Length: 495
Image (cartoon, rainbow, N blue to C red; front, top):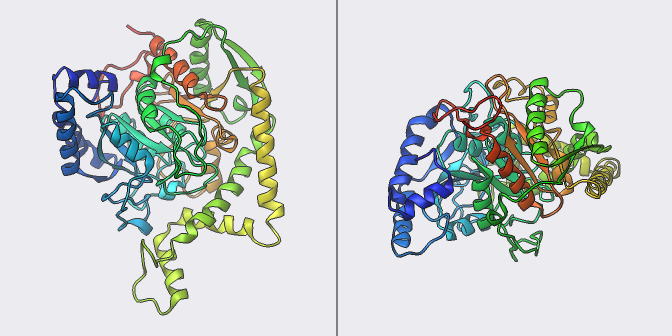
């Protein structure tokens, strides 16, 4: 059952070929057998999952429910889940049990999904490899000696290995799209404000956005439909109508203008990844799209801009973790200052401390104008590049990552090398645009991804283009040994 699409699973539930309880038990069994080698989950809630599945079966039997009723998914452990530990991958919140659900969790729950558990992640979403988690690194199901990407690496690995039907994630600088590329699945980061951030533990508030990781664009469309929309509890939530994403899948793309930024195809891009990306572009061209060479002149500034803005916001957001109200508290503090210092020193990992220090420095008196203000000015230039580009093209495409998944430990001692892994994804967050990663032909047996960037609130267009590509190819059908199914051909053509 784990090898079926969400639509097929929903049809099977309605036809009573299997129940949600049987489906949920199947995924729980796979988690128990396969996840010890992957470490993709932090918390698995067997009893609650089965109880919710039973409720879903009753709804289906009564002729109620929708396309997600009874479908088992995982939530990234950054979303608050009432009564279920939400750790954000950190020792700081190892003992935190939220009193309410995040809006994303609440809406998907209302749609009838079954939460299997909470997916592992880089600590406080700070990382590109899922190696900074307090609970240990997640391993890529394609090669357990390699990273799955981050920070939503647990979600991506769980979907790729067939340990859930889909998963939520968050994307601050590529944290959905990069792990989707490394794990060979589809991942979408919608427009900033499209999904509520209420109940989503903040890293960088002007960049964070909730999204979906799934095996196909069609699956992602169903999940995003349920979780998107305005939320009065989130002051950054957009009051924009949410279209029916599934209804527009399969629309003709003839005449679509695809922009190819020169900056995304230059030095540092692996030759194999580029060849796979260009093969996918050629397929879209065969379907009637036009490829347009273009420039995003300020794109090379994305990484330095991001690593001023994001740490500055992280420094502010993480100031609340002081050992007083909730979270980790040191033993026998001598006084209030000792409580603050030791609780934070013990509760945060090295990467989180590094970013807090960078951000605090950038915001300090005498440096604010030189660093944070300047970074915000450059951020506007990056957004202006995209605005001008979308006057000439309909969508922008390129590689999601410069390479395939790298080995565990390969970049942990070189933070700058780690940060450069997000070189193609960060600009999308700085501009607040939607982005999607879709699998392309494997490179030396490892997944690679094509990134699609759309104009504001153009998630439907991105999902449709990805769906058209997946209808014509079978790269997205590839699965690791942990979840054997028919392997894809190198050309992507269907049998």
